[in-house]
Length: 177
Image (cartoon, rainbow, N blue to C red; front, side, top):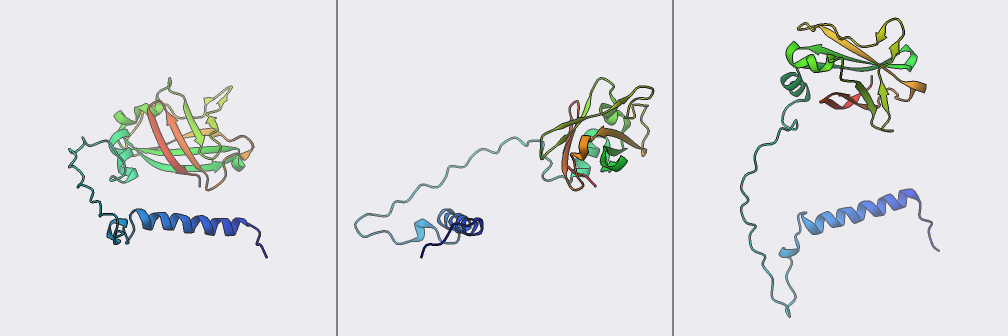
C-alpha cells in the first residue's frame, strides 16, 4: 500500500533531510572523525589560514534597537498603531536630540510606510485645508511627535510588520499595535 504525500509528511521529510545535512556538515559527528576505508588513505585538510580582522561595520546587532535610533537619529520610536478604525496608521516617536531628529521633519523628504508582507508603500495623506498629516514644527527634546499614513482597505493589520522610510532614515520591522 502506498501512502499519499501530505504537506505534514513532506515537512517531516524535509526536516529530516535538513537535520541529516547539519549532522554531516558540522554537527556532533564529523566526516573526518569517521574511520576512512582501508584502501584509501585519510585526507587531512590544512588548517584555515588566519584572516585579517575586518574593519568594524556599523551594525545594530550588538546595540539595542532603541539605543541605535537614539544615538544615530535622535529619536526613540514609540510605535505604530492603527487609528480611524484601521483606515490609517499612526507612527509615534519621541525626540531625544532635535538636531539629529530634524531628518524626520524635513519637508522635502516624503515619508513612506512599507508593508513588509505585500511591499506596498503607504503615503502620508494631504488634506485640503490642513495639509499633510505629519508634524513638521521645530522639534523639542522629550516631546512625542506623530506621522499619519493612509491604510486603504485596512491593508496592514494588527501584528503586521512595516518599515518606515523618511529620506535616509529607515526603521525596519516595526510591529503594528
